[in-house]
Image 1 (cartoon, rainbow, N blue to C red):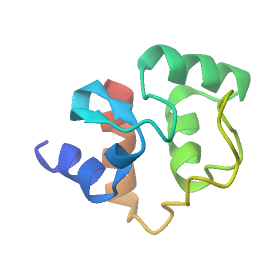
Image 2 (image 1 turned 90 degrees about the horizontal axis):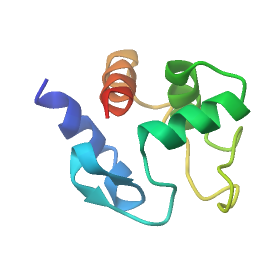
Image 3 (image 1 turned 45 degrees about the vertical axis):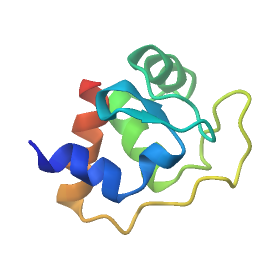
Length: 93
C-alpha cells in the first residue's frame, strides 16, 4: 500500500487537487472528497470507481461545476496496475 500514495504523488495529482488522504492542497482542480466524487459520479451517471477512472483517463468527459475544460491532461499513460491502484486510493479517501 505505500506505493499507492506514491503513485498519486508521482502522477502530480496533488499539485492541482486538494486530497486529505494524500496531504495535498492544490486548488487548480476540484478537491477530491467522497461527497464530491459521489455527487459528480451521479451527475455523470457512472459508478464511483468508473467515474474516478474516467476522470483520470478522459478528464474532459465530465467537468466539475466551476472548473474549465482542457486544464487537466489525460493520465492514460499509467499502466493498468498504476491506474487500478490510483482509483482504489482515491475511492478509499
